Each structure stands twice: as structure tokens, then as C-alpha cells.
Image 1 (tube, rainbow, N blue to C red):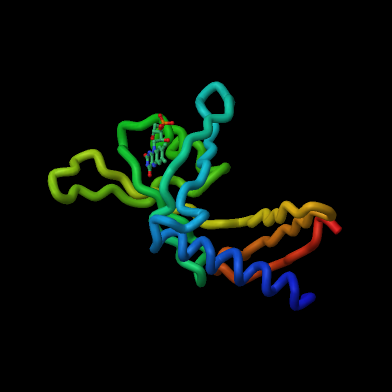
Image 2 (spheres, rainbow, N blue to C red):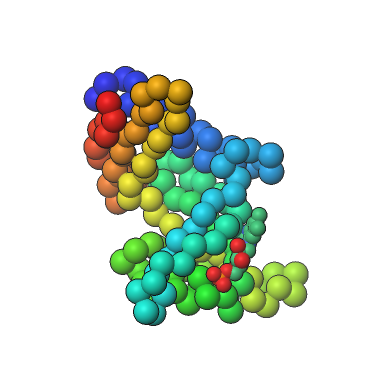
Length: 135
Ligand SMILES: Cc1cc2nc3c(=O)[nH]c(=O)nc-3n(C[C@H](O)[C@H](O)[C@H](O)COP(=O)(O)O)c2cc1C
């Protein structure tokens, strides 16, 4: 694998891990998209709470009464279903959603020659393939 792609993959995951740890990080807020019962796309902003680089897991927190919780529970094909429900500090409706990343789509906007690359991961989190989309 070309070393630049390996570097981009490592760097992308470093930034995702940093986003979970530091409120001011650039990837702290992510747009989470699910599909509702009528097959309509639904997108909303959420805070990235944890990134497990080795396993390629991403975690968010939400309310188990929310639309996203129900949509993700009903559609495990699109994303990993909600993994666990906790009751802590009186937060009876607190839910944790853990996603296993299958594909990471990396894009870099530049004045000229924007760059885009795609990375795919196996079930164990190991990088299975990487390729440039542009150039
Ligand atoms: C900056 C920002 C961060 C947010 N973070 C979360 C979050 O971590 N978890 C969450 O459930 N909702 C979060 N929200 C609210 C969601 O965007 C959304 O409005 C809400 O969860 C209801 O979405 P749903 O009805 O599609 O489930 C955030 C909103 C904003 C503007």
C-alpha cells in the first residue's frame, strides 16, 4: 500500500480519537445519518464521544426515546445497531450507540486538485483496502 494512503488513514483516525477527547477538536461534531421507516434519509448533529482506533469503533450518546435510536435499531444494515443501554445518574433514557466502521471516505478540499481516498476495514478493524478516488 502506498505510504501516503497509510499515513492518511492513520491521521484520520488520530483526528477522530482527538475529537472524542477534546471539545474544541475539528471532528467533535458529526452528522449522523440514518434511514427512517419510510426509507427517507434522516441527518442530525451529534457529539462523537469515543473512537476505538484498533477496532474502528465510533460511539455516540443519545436518548433511547429519540427517532435516531429507533431508526438505528430497525436498520442494522446501514449502521451498527444500538449496543447498550445504561441507567446512570438518574438518566433513565441515556443510550450509547456504537458503530463499527466499514468504510472511511476521506476528502481534502484544496485550492486546486481536491483529494479523495476510500478505506475499507475488516470485521477485526484491520485495514482491508485503500484507494485513491481522486487523483
Ligand atoms: C452541536 C450539537 C450537538 C448535538 N449533540 C447531540 C448528541 O450528542 N446526541 C444527541 O442525541 N443529540 C445531539 N444533538 C441534537 C440532535 O442534533 C438532534 O436534534 C436530536 O438528537 C434529535 O434527533 P432525532 O429526532 O433525529 O433522533 C446535538 C445538536 C447540536 C446542534
